[in-house]
Amino acid sequence: MIARMIFAAMLAAVLPFASPSAVLAKDESGFVQLRKEEPVEIAADRAYFLMRVPEAANSIFFLRVPSDEELQSYEAAKRAEYDRKSRKMPYEEFVFDWEDVTNLYEVRPKRQYVELQPEMRVQIVAAPPGDYVVYGLGYNGFLYQCNCMGSVGFSAKAGQVTDLGTFLISNAWDPSPFPELNAESDLGRVARMDFGMFAFGIKAAEPQDFIPPQLSGSSLTPAAYKAIGPWVDRRRVFANRLATMPGVLEYREGIPFDPVTAQELRLSLDD
Image (cartoon, rainbow, N blue to C red; front, side):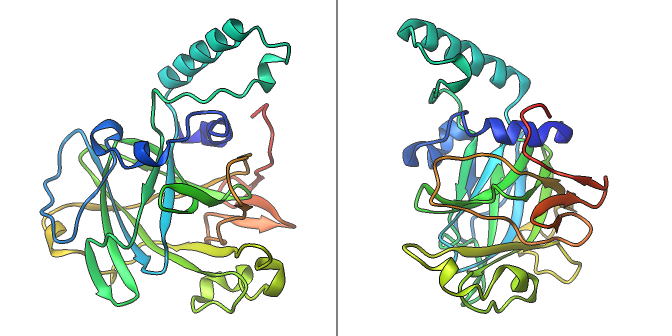
């Protein structure tokens, strides 16, 4: 399923993007950000994310790759709406917002599970099992900056805690405190015109990373990240890219490159 994430992520531009209320509707979406010091009981039918996130981050968005059944249902609903409105435009250009399925989810770091230091928080999330894309950054339910020019994806299995490592976020116009973001930072005015752009990266999980006591008896699996991208999203202020991840995601003249498959990842609806 990971193999078709590039195409499916591009389809997300026309698949349902959750409204702010739908993003936070725990019972409807099955995506729950656990509260501070809340006990963790691993359910056999839920997947779990563990991540360390800077306090400065407002929102981090994850896209769950739609299943084949969801894609078929979406196409059927879109076709019915297209036929009902008798559009003169080509079917492929018909924009259809479908709210029956939520697959864009938000994590708000300020709702910390555990506070490591004043500037870093640990997050634990219960989520529907599936394949996910680290989609971008936002503010209180609204996507602000997508990783449309390159990102990574991972699988989250039922009954398992997936350790996503440490998320690194800083202002792109200033020097970054994180060496991993050096290539994406200190860009000056080009990254701070009408709105400010952010540098965003991920440091893979390491054995010395902090594990919340509530997960001490649980089996943790480091995320097996895969290179993803690019895709199109018209509902954001900025389109940026995730910083290079050694052995996972590289860039060659700005084009995302998968060092595992030795393939460039170009935008193509034929993928």
